[in-house]
Length: 305
Image (cartoon, rainbow, N blue to C red; front, side):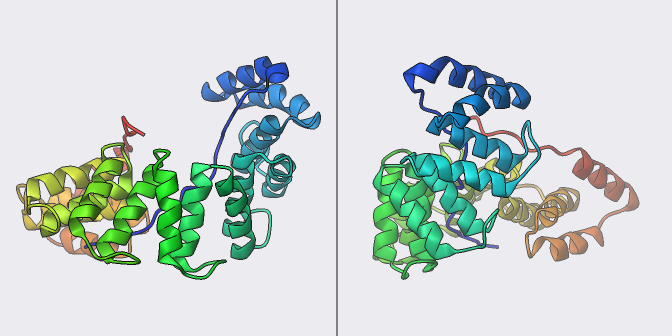
């Protein structure tokens, strides 16, 4: 049931206004936030063509996500790189993400690490966390937990919740530091209280097991639910286990079936077999009601980020 994982935060939209183009950038951002991607494209494209790095980065976002324009990873990389070559830190991070994921370019973890390092040195928190993830896994760089911790801490100091969670992972596992569940719980809590799903799940695990915190199934249940409600697959599976066993909550195979089904749909490796086991214990009426709940379920947005 327990699954603790480092979380990689990919790059996304980032704007800093240059005075001459401030109005167009702002108007594009306002349109973007309203979901009017066509207008955002219209505002940003001329600026990007003239060499504005913020607009070039934003054009990369639109092409990467297929917002206001046909999705095109190659074109996205081209725009990110044009901004990155001007020293735009978020664009440099975004180029790294594309190389790591192999979107529009051949996957190349070493090239991704190089771009993350450029952005990280410029203080970009996403890149600092992402570089730490590569050092954690030894992808594109030698595996080095001390380096991972260094970059995670720099990102966490800028309120990166992914980095806070990842510091917790190092302390929980004792990678590069002395194993310390209490310290792990503190870092998970910092991220979890800000809505980070993986940290919420991980903190739930510690409360369930009584590691670094007093064992408390009610608290574990609440943290699992917070993550599960946002669509976190492992937390959904964990919540299903609690409903199926009646630990910390009244036993309900129907509720267990719902959470296992949602987790299975998101690729959790244990959830499908758990769902099938729960299904065998449902009446036809319970099954129909549970399946309806699965069909109508929608994730909740975190109130904190």
